[in-house]
Length: 478
Image (cartoon, rainbow, N blue to C red):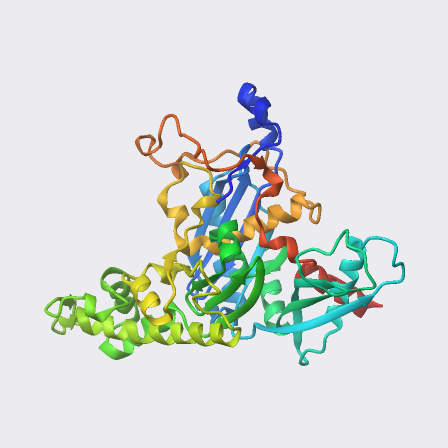
């Protein structure tokens, strides 16, 4: 884990107030997570340590507008987005929100591997960033099925002549530079539905970002990237997988099952209402039936004067375990497809998203995949002192979207027009003073680095999806 400090650390120590004011000149970035079960909006700004302070937070039910990660009912989606944004603004009345980063997932997301090479004209010159950009841009001409859109072109390892496995070829000299690429595509119609819903909510989309990459950036550290790790974001409608190894994104996949499927299984299997099924899953659910007590019983109130119904906790766990095992079977399948096993993924599996909070899920994951597992919390990028609600795994995507916005800002790829310099963290977002140490001690083994040197997977993502759509619209008008 890398701690981010300002460039002028000595100045901060002696002039803390001035540094605090300068940090307020940083833009407020808003992440909007449009999920199957909930719409969440989080506004954040980097402080003087390069950590995120949460300045606004709101959520709302998805209002049956999203299924398996895709917006199907635009009118209901607009209502849900407006409600979430209203709650976010209400949490901090001084906050003004006009621009958002939006996540995308769903069954339509696919990925493929390609190879590209560029023969250089000037052999005596060193390879430049412009040549690398041209090599990447050429991959956007890759054939994909009609109706699909390329979301991201992510270079993996480069080659220069006979030299292999180069992370960055800039500064090398040679006749030919090439690279392997991971291309992510999505359904054009599904992407446009997200655009319509957000725009009708009177918001400007700064970029549309693949959700598993956003979640990965929120819960991963530099050591994970080096060791090799799989990120499994268990959402409401889908479970998103991203696999990293040797500093490279090796694979992405969207598994068509999530927490909503578990709830529906409980509803059908136990003949209860969906609201009752969700409550039982959250309060009494377990991913391992053998860890539950065989004589434990849940009593459910009867409907319309009917007698109360009794449900075995073990039966509930068996239903949950069956569906979670199916999701993990998909994970194992995808890892085998790309040749990743316990030897390649020393970092194991990081579970995040709302579904990761099921009891005994870590044990089931380790048993079924043979990999070490842990829960990924987005708190490593947050400033200290936030309430526990904001550090839950279900908000990993939102936090990752904010980090993507800051990466764009620090690389001068995006400009933010809305000023929120007077906005401060609301008192309601702060943890009780007793839980925060008066004199926090910085770990001695964490290096002092510049804020812009923070590890980010976004350095390899070259062009935003929203910019591509703008280019297409301009071409259609010509």
